[in-house]
Image 1 (spheres, helix red, strand yellow):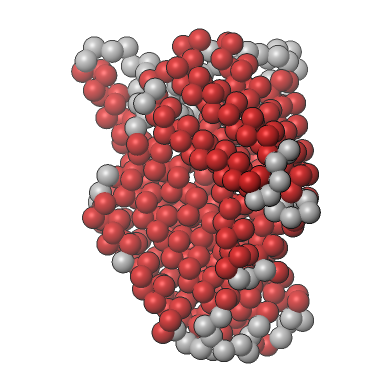
Image 2 (tube, rainbow, N blue to C red; image 1 turned 90 degrees about the vertical axis):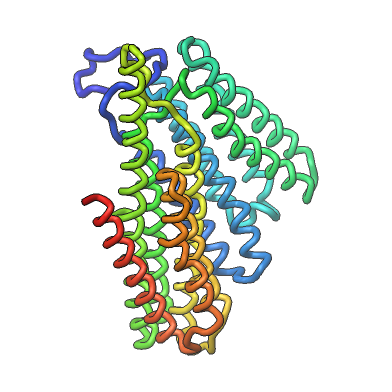
Length: 405
């Protein structure tokens, strides 16, 4: 809202926002804090349960929380009017996500009902927001209808899950996640009625990556604290910080920059095509599969970084273990997943699969191989991992600069 209380009405019907310069709002940044706590709780779960069962539960719950964030982000990308109704809705959803975070430690156990109630409450808010958009934004009803139907199905599935015992309860959650994954893909084919805002979208996903990288940094701090600054642990913490820096560089200086530019070039091409066809230039952001790949590529990017952060914390906490260990496999597996997500972002948005397979695709098996043939000493392992990722970043930086010339 404007700083002048009389400048904008407190209640404004949602409108389609795609023809103006805009970035993330302060409300969105505040809203993200709830997801920071949910992600932190996920990481804490994995630290205390570093085995295949723990990794599977971590992945399952991460997908649920990530999809919740994505669905709200896609709504705001199109229909954010920052009026009183939207603010109250976002605050209610934020409280629901905080409930998910508070019950995350036993989300598939003794606290599965509070977790489900909280998740259901948040998705009900989103359903009501889409119903409001359906009422007011007539020109976008073809696209809104997809999300309205999908949100309705998700709400029903989560409501039914409350009366369903485990493990069938979790199957219903998974089915709801599948509906969430399919909905944006279906909506892509109706994009002319509700295009995505291509300036706002990369910024929002970039902020999500920053939040996850913050968890990697938090793992370094927690490891140092819990080992009382053990000399070896302190050195491993230094290599872990270098890994975080390299991951930041790989994403923001190469992956995000190149993929966002590819989306903007696609938008400009659509503008030219419409101008040549005699259009008025109003509908220029024609969404295609590149936007879906940009969105879904961020799931392995964020999940991989979070898992790698937990693995690095494990190395710091157990500086004298003989590798490979659960921690070292989380590090290489997480970083390999992060690089695979980066490849999906680049290959999908640029429509150049071969380039993505060369960089960073070739680094994925190398990173995984480090888990088998890498040093057995945690300090040496951390150093080699940091150096390897730095080399990957250097190569990617050079290639991206050459492409821009």
